[in-house]
Length: 242
Image 1 (tube, one colour):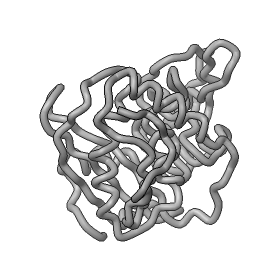
Image 2: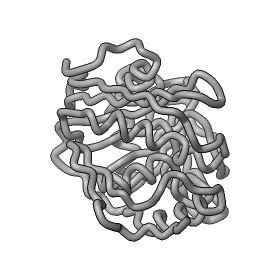
Image 3: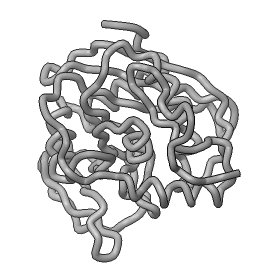
Image 4: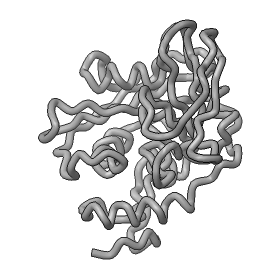
């Protein structure tokens, strides 16, 4: 099966949140790694975020290691962060659970949920890694390239990299390093809480990603978009427009 990421016929899915059909999803593990290397070259680290009115969060829940997963997306207005819309989708998780390749397992069900949206988000926070990834293409970057939209990786755990201790006060952070390369930030979003691992997804800088994550944290460790997406994936938020 070809692994080229060049667009082909029918390259755009005509939905509100358009996803470029840059590759197949039924691929082998080696093919998936090749695709990651190729898509990583398309990630933009330049700030292309302005006039933010709607912020989205995405997450996924899976009942077990196999079977069906539920992808969820919530859309909040900004700066109020009032819930505007929530959508979910369920699909069989066809790709195996392989660390570093979770975007091939999780993206299809997340994309299916986002195709239901009636509101177009300007910025999307993803519960997962951005470029803080061995091949610089975690879930947030993968989705950002497919959507061609600004995304931020906001992970609860570290996939790779080293960092200095982080101060206990909200807003303190340390650079997450892979060798000499800065791949993200270890950010304290709430005083004395465990830090989050923030990284560029697509179309913004690390400094902007840190600012946006902090601005979306309203008293919780997790920013409201991904916190509410987690609840939606668990079936704890009603679907539809708020």
